[in-house]
Image: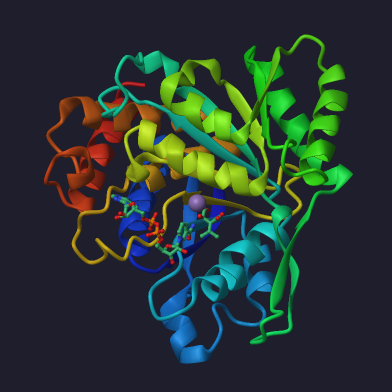
Amino acid sequence: MKTYRIAVIAGDGIGPDVLAEGIKILETVARMDGTFSFEFTHFPWGCEYYLKEGRMMPEDGMDILKQFDAIYLGAVGFPGVPDHISLRELLLVIRKGFDEYVNVRPVKLLKGAPCPLANVKREDIDMVVIRENSEGEYSGEGEWLNKGTPEEVVHQTGVFTRKGCERIMRYAFDLARKEGKSVTSVSKANALNYSMVFWDQIFHEISKEYPEVETHEYLVDAAACHFVRDPGRFQVVVTSNLFGDILTDLGAAIAGGMGLAAGANLNPERKYPSMFEPIHGSAPDIAGTGAANPMASIWSASQMLDFFGYENYGKLVIDAIEDVLVEKKHLSPELGGNAKTNEVGDAVQEKVAARMQHR
Ligand code: NAD
Ligand code: IPM
Ligand code: MN
């Protein structure tokens, strides 16, 4: 029997609660299929670990993670540890260190999910944001000069490489070609006269390799407006690290909320493990209350199933989430219900089991 070894970093705040539900779903799918299984290894890394050990993960953390088929992450970051430490020393280290340069973030309004937009049809919110995930504005490079003086100045350097731009754009175009969709590039060349002029130039070059794929281009501010006014114009969206970060929280807002927004950090070459995580954070404002919606982490688990080649099960899990949304009996407070995190997970698990039985 094939066994997939998964490193679990539940992390902080609501991370452990939502991840437990995703694990439940993966275990149910594997058990009922019967030809493969998951072996989960839990790592207690995150802010609590930091407060005890002075680091977010052990020194050989990346060597440990490298042994796994995938990483399943909840969320990191909590008051008490500065965000630039908690995120830079764990999440961003993994994304960059394992060359997970593709961040796949679906923005799809599922049946039964609430949408705050008036005059928008459900089918119009159905896109995927392909976010560059290894460089750009997140390069981490920069300098802090003349600290504490009136001449203090900081430089935060965006690093855009030809290789980095080309590979993320090719990923987006390949996906669009496979699915018969358009590609929209989101940039900001009117203000960012190096990085985004370069981005646009490479987009034009790569688009010539895919003459059959329709393309669109927007400045990021205008794109934000269209996300709200007319999301139907987007299908595959390719954008930089920071713009993708911001646009996908906006995407979450139009597609039901943070508890419904999933993401996959992929190393498409499969040289290193890929990482699956909800796009939301540790939500300190609701941590410990049981109010977190686990659907985003369950959706990320479905992306993991896709990645391992079980696309039929990936889809089955999304269908099961939709069943629960449509039924409206087990919804978390974010969606207007009063179900606890584990009750939502149980409800999805029940629907998954029913669908597995009738498959
Ligand atoms: P957040 O995503 O944690 O929360 C934003 C809002 O969305 C909050 O009101 C929260 O209650 C709500 N929310 C988030 N997830 C939810 C869910 N599953 N169900 C219901 N409501 C949900 O963003 P923030 O408050 O800006 O960040 C909190 C911490 O998380 C910070 O330390 C931040 O750096 C970190 N963070 C980590 C990740 C990650 O690990 N991938 C992602 C984003 C933010
Ligand atoms: C996300 C998060 C991270 C990001 C933060 C926590 C560094 O907001 O995954 O969307 O900006 O990528
Ligand atoms: Mn984000």
